Image 1 (spheres, rainbow over the protein chains, first blue to last red):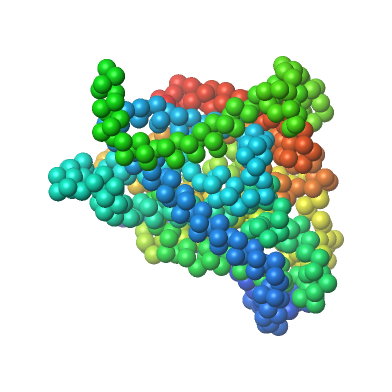
Image 2: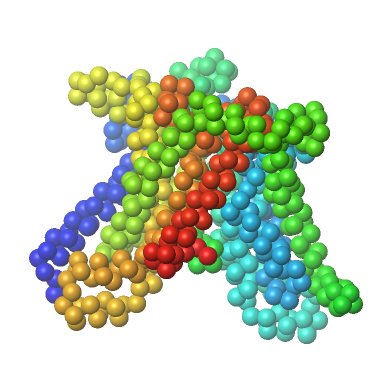
Length: 287
Length: 302
């Protein structure tokens, strides 16, 4: 197919625009990284634009010395790992049962969970519910309270439905129990889907901030994101941080904290990206 | 009748066993709070509990509708939604259309990988970056202004800038990831349609207009309905992080008002009423949008 001159110009422009879009997306990351590696003076004077100036690792050693950040990091790891496991177990339970057409009451249960997609009680009743359950300032609230996403249940239910019944029947004739059919046949077949929704859960756990801020008060329980809010957005470092000589690195400490907070996500992102895209597709077709 | 009922439950006892923790979770964390919504109609006191707090009808709704806050938060919510409908909604569509025309697969993949990335960064970090970039003392933007010999501006304290900052931030974070769904729709267009258009002598532009756009129109309509249905749900997490009393005039939306009244000031009944008001209007909006979409394009959510 021959291209007209106009089309050629369009293609050239298209590349330029898209390259610009990619650069605009990346620039803030590049700046944050460069600023975190520069001397505080260079950052405050506005000399840093692209690459680090007066390279130093002071900000990072200050971050590693700050006890609050380490505690927050450990808490976030805990909420992410334990929370994702709890989420996956509960989601598998519901999605597997609801994927069976023969199950009596299936329609009703499906309607019940779908209602939560269009209507939820909202912020205050949810908060008061935690209060009534005596789950304020409790790690359990974060782990259990936000365990299931109906969207993920639907994705997994759709996948389970696509597994032919014959496979399960064959295993059952061989004498396998219901439990071992699920554990040995269905789950191994669903590895890719489980990875997808597991990652959905893990990322939202890692990034979760609002309810952790509202429900948790004890500084020993708060995740990194809540701490980041104080540190980076409100620019109010903790008291011992101000007293600490660490704070003399000032501005760059904030950037180093941002880098440390997003590093795990950025590091695994290239490997997990395709799962997310797949998840969005399934969700959009069957949502 | 009862016999078959028991038989079915016995046959599927394993499935019901799995359902118990699952449905229990929905009961405790989804439906129990819905029962708590009734405090919107009560003079709620934590010590008396929900059912012993006196019933006051629509009192809280009336107070809210007559207060000065009502107009302010409604206007701000609608303005932010409307502006993002105009400026943010088309960006993923355009991005998908442009990516669709790229023949070099490596280039396309690279652009996609980069533009999806911000979606995975937490709202706190993104707001933190925005706050620091715009900071009057050491922010990048003010450093540039300073170098150009211009006066420094405390951007986040100027009410007029708030919407622009907020919507630009959202575009930066979500446009790439939002394009995925349109890219999928574009991939679903039958290539024969393009071939037929070429045979008919349609130019590139004509092909986009008569094949590509109609091909993804159903997807655009569904996204538009969802967007209109959530017109009153502005991303409050980010606003809570970015606004300050100086910018309340343009930044305070319904859900941030609910947060301040309820969680911070402890006026639970009032805040629940405002939240319920918000949800009901949102529900009505999505029904209207769906109806219109069906009428105009034949496609809807249900």
